[in-house]
Image 1: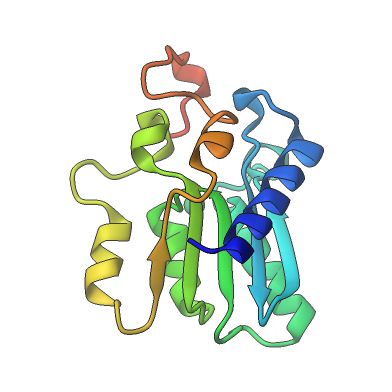
Image 2: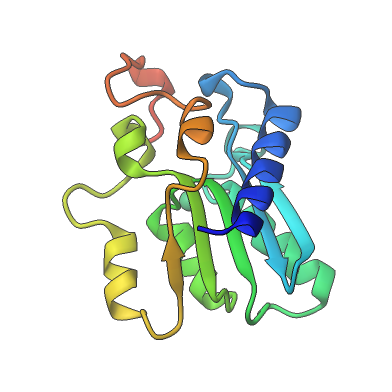
Length: 164
Ligand SMILES: [Zn+2]
């Protein structure tokens, strides 16, 4: 973790709150694509709003980054996200040329509904299989990020569980 990571994560948290508020039911998840200290694109979760299961904050940010740069690969960039990315977003980051993924709240900090996999984490798989290409850092401002989501022991109605 470094000061820049904290600064960008604070920005991501601010974007999540300004766009979606602080109620976990409204999925205040935000992501940033940053390269060489420059913010290229942002995204917030829009799955419910767009009726699009792929509109996770990270994918939204990667799409916006492609549009902003005119290139589908943003080589050497860092993806910041307030919540540990799922398998889809982790692999999308590889296709988009990310060098780093930096996340806030980790899997153990939040309710299990946020993750599609059980004992074999997609991020663990990627960290092993792709470690030459992609650095993964977690836990940046984890407490601030986790405060936006359902906790591990919260009782969440089935209708609000993304992976139920
Ligand atoms: Zn995702």
